[in-house]
Length: 423
Image (cartoon, rainbow, N blue to C red; front, side, top):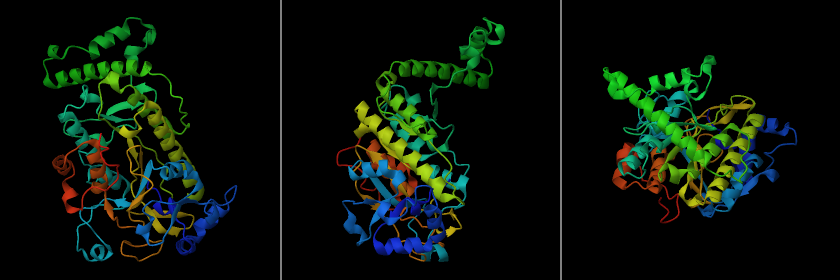
C-alpha cells in the first residue's frame, strides 16, 4: 500500500523536528488525539544513534514507540536502515526529473505498477522478478538438492519469485497445500473416491498422448510428492520457544522459520522467501492505522530474527522490507498521498547494523530530491539495494549484472553486510 517513510524514520534534532511538525500539523493533531497521548511527541520518540551519524551533518533521527523491537535490533547492530530507496533507471534529481534530463521508470505512483517495478524492474505485466533471477543462479550452482524449494512464497503468486527456472513454491501458514479430494477419506461418503481421484491426478505422464496433458500430469505428480515431503519434514521439527505474535505477517514469517528449520531434511541451503502484508495506503486516519501496522511489522520481524537465533542460523538469514512507494511529506488532512522513494529496514546477524545507509532527505519541500509535495526521488535504486543482497547471497559480479541489468548505471552495491559474511 505504500508505507509513509516520513512517519517511520522521524526527524529528531530540534530544527528538523520543528520543520516536520509544522508541515504535518493536521497529522500531528491526529496523533495527539490518540488514546494514551501522542507517540509523536519528541520526548517519546526512540532516538537512533547510528555509528555513522557524522554523515548527516548534525541531523538526528528516531523511530516511533510502535517500532521498539526494530529500534532494539538497530541499537544492538542486527538491523540497518537504507534511506530513500526506490525504482530508478539511472540516477535522477529534481532538475532532471522536471526537464527530462534522465530517464525515469514508467507508471510511477500506481500501486500495481510500482509493486511490479520494485519486484521486477518493470510495470505490471513483467514476467521475471529479481528474486527469481537470484533463485535461478542458486539453481544453476546446484546449491540445493531439491531445486523446487529454492523460491518459496507464503503469500500467493508473485512475480518477484519468477525466474527462467525458478517458480514460487506455495507454502501455507500451516504447511503445504493439500488436495482435499485425495487427503480426505470418506469424501462424498465414499471410501473409494479419494483413491480414484488420486489415480486420476497422478496418472503416469507417459500414459498421456496429448503433450499438454503430459505436462499437467507431471506437474501434478511432482506437486503432490513435494507437498508430502515438506509436510513430513515440517512435522518432524520441534516447536519454537520463540513466541510469534498473532498478526498475519508474523504467522507468515513463522511458516518461513519452520521451513528453514527443516532445511537439512529438504536438502536446501540457498532459499528466497516472499511474505506480504497490506493496509499501508493511508490516505486518511494515518495515525491509528500506521501505529497498528508498525506494531505488527516490528513484532513480526523481531520474532523472526529471534527464531533464526534459536535455530543457529541468524548469520545466514537476512530479512528486508519493501513497499509500493513512500508517501508525500505534505499531508492531506489526516492522511498522505502516493510517493516514490522510501526508507527500509534490513535485519539479520550478518547485517553491518546500527547504521543508516543511503540518505534521509530533510523534512522540507522543494529540496534536490523532491519531485513535488515532499515526494522523494530515490537516492538509492532498487537495483543497488538488490545487488547488496545478491552479493551476500553469494552471486558474483557478473551474475549480479546478469540478474540486475540496470546495476551498471549506478555506483554498485551498498555496504550492508559485515566483511566475509556471504552465505
